[in-house]
Amino acid sequence: MITYESICEKLGFDAKEGPPETEYDEWRCDDHTPSVYAVLSYEELLWLSDNGYK
Image (tube, rainbow, N blue to C red):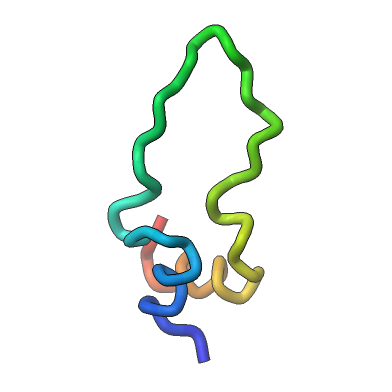
């Protein structure tokens, strides 16, 4: 069963607040860094979307 708590635990942060801020080097294009949400399954991403989380 998918729960909000299990998703937050898997992400390592509160999904309501979004990922923690990281320092950004404006001169470096970092398109190869995977999304922090890549650890979630399709069903978990769908659950977040269906329940109003962005």
